[in-house]
Length: 253
Ligand SMILES: Nc1ncnc2c1ncn2[C@@H]1O[C@H](COP(=O)(O)OP(=O)(O)O)[C@@H](O)[C@H]1O
Ligand SMILES: CC(=O)N[C@@H](CCC(=O)OP(=O)(O)O)C(=O)O
Image (cartoon, rainbow, N blue to C red; front, side, top):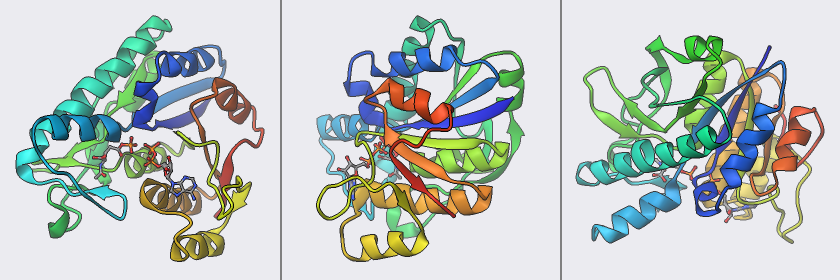
């Protein structure tokens, strides 16, 4: 049975029932198992702003001071995770909301200057295979922990790639744009390492998309197959991708 890790960008939560439409596509698939890894960057922005914090990013990664972590964890592992669970339940699936720790990923601090931004490496326990055996849908937030129990804010694209790696699963990034766009805002069909570095150096790919393409390339190289970036705005995109059709941008190793 093919395993698919589907990374959902957090903006899906701003669009009523968009996630439910994707869950419906998944529930109709036979011979496939799904694992959701989700973001929620826009929700984190709102929660931090409402709490009076200023939040900034460095190359697409949110600088995460210790005192902001309760809001970040609350938005990602709490609100975003449970909102997605609600839409999965409405789509007649059986979701189990977990963090990276239960999904077999351990984190450590990435870079002191970023605060509690975490990395991903292989952890000690992994509930995902058991959940899949029981026909449950793991919905994994990008909150990680180290072996001392310190919590970390992990970029959700990096989290999805680590989960796909640990399960040797197919990986699809579903974001808020149809594809990676070139300098003229035209969709790019396929990208390799050289094209990616040129587009980043020239500033055409930046911010969250920079993290996504860099992470996709590493994942494609590790998995030795293409990784897709497409939009969650059209559920038919997911259907097409699951049927091996080319939609969005394919990142090739
Ligand atoms: N070359 C590019 N092509 C497409 N989107 C880009 C590009 N460069 C930057 N972006 C931005 O990246 C965003 C997607 O990244 P991000 O907001 O992190 O998505 P997600 O929350 O789905 O992970 C797009 O909405 C767009 O604003
Ligand atoms: C370290 C880091 O950048 N963490 C991200 C985690 C959420 C995320 O990645 O959300 P999207 O997938 O919706 O962008 C953040 O705080 O925004």
